[in-house]
Image (cartoon, rainbow, N blue to C red; front, side):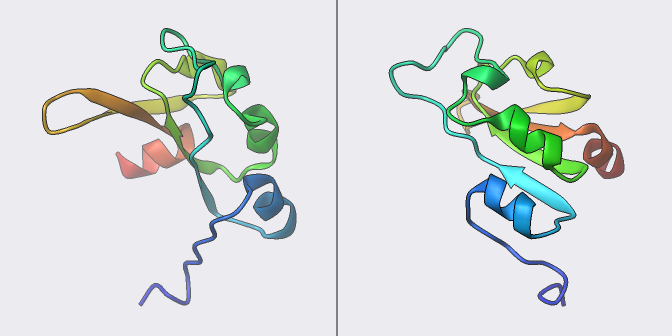
Length: 105
């Protein structure tokens, strides 16, 4: 019964935010590759203008981030959650905006 209420869009986040109002946003910014900082990745070091996108994003945002990401480099308050595989190896961080994290708690 959610098909009339939910629309999934796979596109450049900047285009979606500029042309479509959204209640929530899930972002998977590019990271990895030869220049990826495996010790302390920051918002400015990801392969997109993440801070620019977040300035125009709705309140409810989920970010898929590298395991070494410094969550404090994001504006506002975020609730990071480590994502581990079945062997207990940290694969990535899922960071939820504070408003979304509070509603899910």
